[in-house]
Length: 398
Image (cartoon, rainbow, N blue to C red; front, side, top):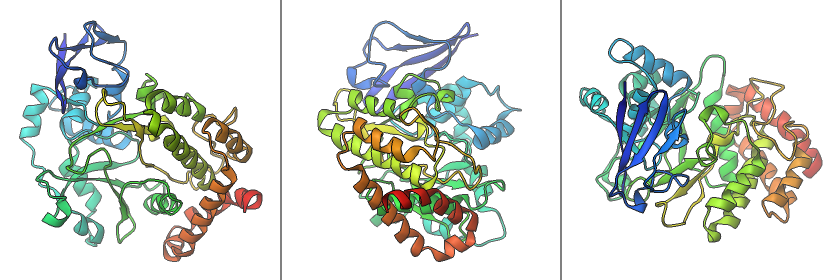
């Protein structure tokens, strides 16, 4: 049996993706323009792109973990839940990036759903007995345009005219929750992302709910008019399946930046990459894998790609005390060995004074933890793990 999905970008119809005899094929329309390319790796051409698995750009937003489990529970009795259905679902409801994927089957499914939107203030201030995250998942689980193992849901925002940025389009929120086996996870991400912001690393807008159970972030793959812009994570840019997100090195990301970023964006993107990797080492983030780095661009013909803001920074040693780095850092994955590895990695990123960057991040960490006493008391395991991870850096660079 052959399944066919429609693929489009803001620049127009692109082509069709097919599942046939165990292979996945993507074919551009004969009239597709260069601007309608779906990936920096897949320019418009006459020949089809054939893969044994879904093409990396199509794997990028597929649901994982909790979201995938919830989707299966919701849909198993109605439709066959296979990669093509998941691709159409993740590509139909405001997916991350600029590539939309649709099918008649999923269009009919979504037409039966209501996505009314939520007010950010109400989500952050929720204090009812009902689990608001479970309620949000129940209402918005079919808007599955974002990957990741952590429980999360993509929710349209209801807001006043002042925060709509003078556009009729709807902004959206990525709402994350933790599971019982990861206590304090929302506080964890809020603290780590706050350190990144304090240290001058570009980050999206983010919030912590008043009850400290939800971490909320605005999506960053939209322009000022809330129109979609290109985003590809490093796994997709390297032509890798999502499950290969731990297979490369931070130096490979630096090479990808040199290859894909515009000349005027290379230096700034490399400096940002170094800052993101060094901060991950300092706060004990053992999950900074290929899918947690990506590039933003307007369209594939503009040559204006740049490194995306930092996202998904969390301390993992609070839950896995002996955790290691997600990717190879100059021949090593040890968090303990990362101090020397960072100084070597600075060369690959053309960072002349890495010690100053690291010292600035340590100072930012102290400021954030110093003014977050109540959060640290609510999640003492997280605060202790972050301080323990940063300790060797304090000794070496403080």
